[in-house]
Image (tube, rainbow, N blue to C red; front, side, top):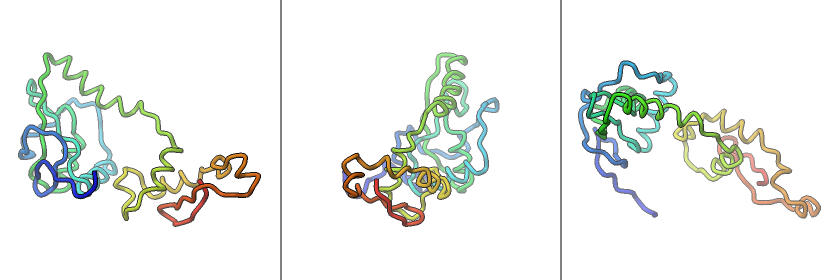
Amino acid sequence: MKGKLEPKGYADGIPVYCAYDEIADVEKCIPNPDNPNTHSERQIKLLAKIIKANGWRLSIVISNRSGFITKGHGRLKAAQLLGVNQVPIDYQDYASEAEEWADIIADNRIAELAERDKGKLKDIFGKLDFPDIEITGYTLDEVDSFFDEVDIDEFFTGEEKASGKKGKMVKCPSCGEEFAA
């Protein structure tokens, strides 16, 4: 799909692209005081920057059972850092306290179990063309390190190596250096 994407709504001027039940005042979002996940200042600043640049892509999830946030404690903190008064909220039903806790813990844990394919990340970063790399969640130094780790020979076929031909040229988004990929 090309062109401008229309948001589903706006929360205090920030476009909302995710599903939500309502756009509500941040006061409706009550953090679970026993949430085992913590958020660093760096993470919250980065998340706020991403929300401001890309709009809301995930709502804050609140349990109808307890009234507490089950998913989105960091998003709430980012909204507060941005100084916004409204956020998208999704309400979820849980049959029991145990089910609610299992969902909170799983939400925090599942992302930790993911593994990143650095080769694919390098390819994607090589294709990006926007001024602020940090809206990907990575710093410029982290992206630079991906490109520093590239073994250029791994991108050449045996025939290309023998003939001296280079493959597709990729430009580093931070330093502008080109290399064969």
